[in-house]
Length: 170
Image (cartoon, rainbow, N blue to C red; front, top):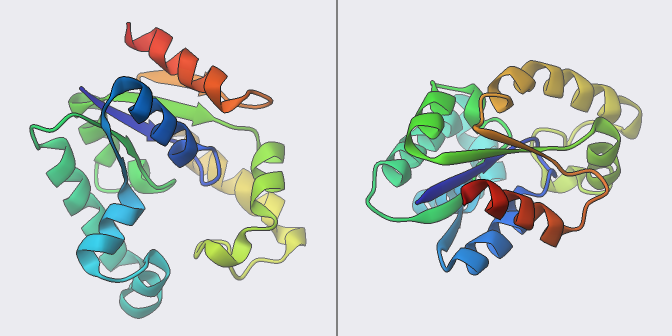
């Protein structure tokens, strides 16, 4: 079984994914970390040195390799992954997909102190961050909402989110 977690940055995909994988006795992959290992560069370095188009091409290539493999795993994808190169169709046909649906206010509270670690928002000031998140979510929601399941994550403990995912898998 292949399980893909998608949603906006800071929605909890990697945190939930690690616990979910452990509960299911599956391997966990974070697509960004997978790309960094294969490319021998951080995502920030790839964006800076080779550009977003190069990153998106590599992202799709590595996503296809993982989803077309015979392995079973839990995969957390980047916030933009479903929005490019028909990736959402690949995710939908090759996996059980879950959208970790998180509100703008929750995302803002998580991201406001993490900006420097995230290439997409590193240059934004706090005044523009919430508007940026809102605009991005509006653009990306049509892709996110194509996931097979949507899990509301606001004000929930990680274990509750994991249980909700497990309940949908049975």
